[in-house]
Amino acid sequence: MLLEEELTYKIRGCFFDVSNRYGKGLKESIYQKALAESLVKARLKFTEQHRINIYSLETGVKLGTYVPDFIVEDKVIIEIKASSFTRQDDISQQLSYLRCSIYEIAYLVNFNTFKLDIRRSIYTNDRKPFITQLKKFENNP
Image (tube, rainbow, N blue to C red; front, side, top):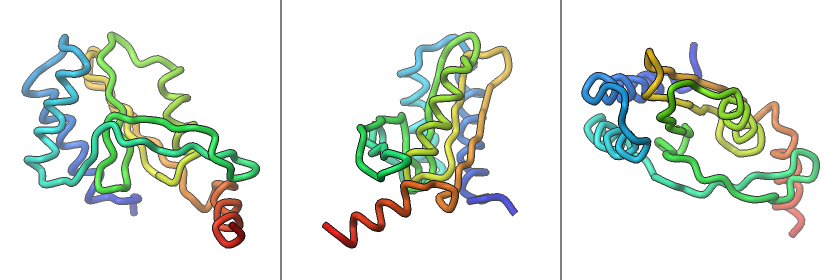
């Protein structure tokens, strides 16, 4: 069984919908607007440019913020790219955001690669040391 299987299936369908309708060669901002339309059509709740707090893996202290393209159903991060290839830096950054945030699933989708490039990453909260630290800080303000 996949984590959030039904939700992620719908999200992937939106990626393919945008790719099939618009193809490659557009700017990232256009793909973002097209994906927003597709998410609405799929009746998925989302926020754009939502700020995510990034926490220290050791102390649980807030280190800064990250602003992904979308958060869907308050469960899945989506980051959009529109370049000729997906960089390793983008993949590493996606994993870091998952590792240091409360979200467990992220998609990195590049609409301008030869074939639509969808990268799904999972980092469950039970493996995140800062979650325990956060609970300590919340109980002892």
